[in-house]
Length: 217
Ligand SMILES: *Cc1c(COP(=O)(O)O)cnc(C)c1O
Image (cartoon, rainbow, N blue to C red; front, side, top):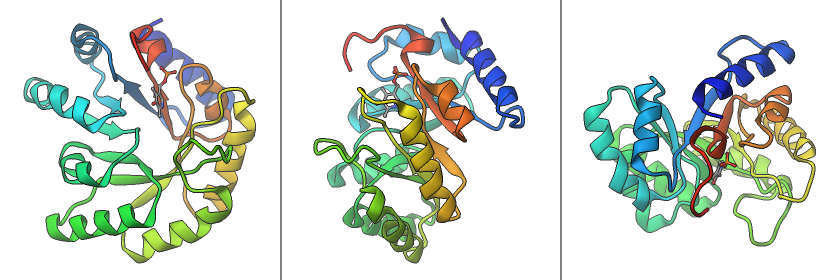
């Protein structure tokens, strides 16, 4: 498929939903991809990338940042407290804020550094046991806690259950965001980003449809 086709499909989905051209940010998810595929997408001019592991990103991106200007990096995977400092130094946005302890430590670090990545609160819209994220019913409280800590909450993020119609989850996320006065919605992956855009996504996270299949998840 590739970058150009995905950009075209995003533009068509924006138009189809009556949304402004360019209102959806494409995060190219480069986790586990061979370096030459990532370089090829950088050479095509794309600059916004997503990674799901701090360690992997720390091995790959400092070198690429030295060679390509204007890279914007999004952490879309789980964040352990012991990787927090490394994460705030490397990433421009974190999509996996999901617990009070993490919020408090992010606030401490923001104070100390005078800067904080843009934050998305991950919501477990499917209420799946094994999945990260705050429960839908706890999200309003958690948003309020993060705001009380002066954290820059940009919006909400979800990963719908694999077996379910994602549109129900995207609509739920949009509803929770709206009632909290948040307009950032990180939702939609290779298989469903057009649906997500129709339901208000501002950030889509697309990996395999740009880079090709991954060797592992
Ligand atoms: C891997 C991953 C993606 C991208 O998945 P594709 O199906 O390859 O587009 C999006 N979001 C998260 C959180 C991921 O871990």
